[in-house]
Length: 203
Length: 203
Image 1 (tube, each protein chain N blue to C red):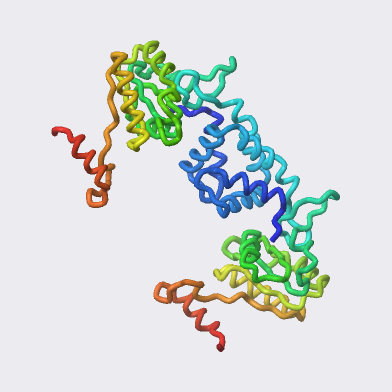
Image 2 (cartoon, one colour):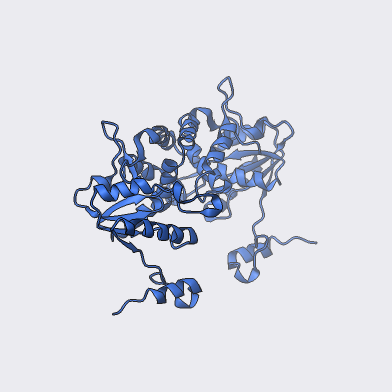
C-alpha cells in the first residue's frame, strides 16, 4: 500500500528511537494519526523546545533544566542536602538515572560522557580529567565512587581514574561486581562468579 | 531524583503510546535529550501538522494525505488498478494495513471504525451501515469480504453485515479462521481448532 507521505516520514523518524523497529514505529505513527490531535500537538510542543529547555548541567553533565538566567544546574547539584564530599563517577546520564533510582547514593555525580576505548581511538586525553580534578578540588571531595560499567572499557577507565585520583590524595572506591540480586549461581558466567568470590566480604 | 520538568512532561506524553510503559518512555525521552537536537526538532515538525496533513479517506476511512484542494482520498482509493467490485470490510485502519501487507487483497476497503458491542452500548445504529450501502451501490460491488476479527464482537458484526448486505443482493464472504501458518495443533485452543475443522476444504 502507498501509505500517506507524512506517515512514512513519521515512521522513519520514530524508528530512530532506541529499541524501536519499523513495525513498532508504524504502530506509534498510526496511533498519533488515529488518536485525537491533542497527543501529537502536545508532543510536538515539548519536542520543539526541548534542547533550549534542557541541557547538560554545568557542574556534572547530568541533564538540567535551564533557569531564568539561562544557567544549567541539575536537580542533584542544586540539592543542598547532598553530600558534596562524596562523588560518584558514571559513564553516561542513563547510568546516573539508574544509580539515582537505587536510592543508595547520597552524594553528587560526575558524568564522563565516554569511556576509554583504544579500539575506537578514545585515549586518556579524550576524558574530562582536568574538569574532574577541578571539581574534586573545588568541592573538597573526600571519596570518589567509580561506577563505570564492569565491562572491558569500563574497567580500563576505572583503573585510569583510580591512578589519577589517588595521586590527587582522594579515597577512590569501585562499585561491587558479582552475582546480581535474585540471580542464579548456576547460570552466572565464570567472570561474574570469579568477581563475586574475589569481592567477598566477611559477615 | 528530581528530573528536569520538561523531561517529566515528555515522559508522561510518550507513555501514552501503545505498549510503552514509564521506563521505555524515560528511555525515549533521554534519547531525545542526549541526541543532537535534529531528531527532536524533525519529529516536532512532523507531529505539529500531522492532523492537518493526514485524515480519514472520504470514501473508505483509511488514512489519507490531504491534496492541494483539501480533499482526502487514500492511496488505495486513488489506485485505479484496484478492483472496485471487490470490497473488504475491516474494523480499523491497523487491520487494513495488516491486510495490505499480506498482498492478498486486490480490491478496495471500507473501515467500520467500530464493532458491535452490546456491553459497551454499541448497537447496529452506531455502525456506518448507510454509508456502506451507498458505497456498494455506487461502486457496483459484487463481493464483500468481511475481515472483522474472529472475536465475539467481530463475529457479531460479521453476522449483522452479512444479513444486511445479502438483502442488498451482494455476495458476502468471511475470511477463514483456523490454525495460523506455522502454528502447532497441540497448542491451538479448542475454538480455533473447531473452526479449522468446520472450515476444512477439499484438496
